[in-house]
Length: 233
Image (cartoon, rainbow, N blue to C red; front, top):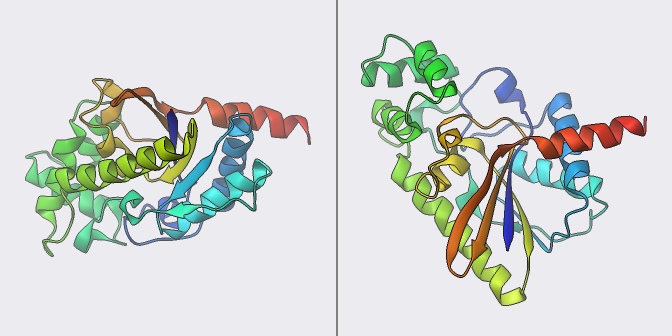
């Protein structure tokens, strides 16, 4: 079976470069448009079950996908385990504030340098997540193991449901960092250390008790949907 995990569309807090984990904000107009493209690009896949967390941006993204696929009346299962990382005391603050604190913990000169190296795949994402967690003065931010554990718990729940029902294709909307933590010990693909774009897809294949990461950060569905929708304009 194939489980397609999609990152939510771009939000207001994304646009303002604010930390957004368990805090939440609606999609922006460009975020809605990209989600529409993703929905159009995924339309030909015969999904049998759908999941999000209880975060508004994930719910909103899923509803846009379903509308674009002509399945607005479909029931969606919510799993709180699919939430983004909880950033503790950094929630809602400017991303550079959190990045600078984590960079200092890692012995780096600035958060900008840290994010640049992360974007280039030069920093192990688990190390960066743990540095963020250790930098939280509230001592409440999740660490990498906590995120991975709950995300894989959600994955196992999704697979168990699908096995019982005989489903072959499942769609789930989650968040970038948590999706990467989920697959951190499942693949050697270097892209697991690079940030996921809004609406990027991580495709997990399950067969005979084994998980395989087929695609990681795939934007081809968005590109396909954009071509389809723009043709109709």
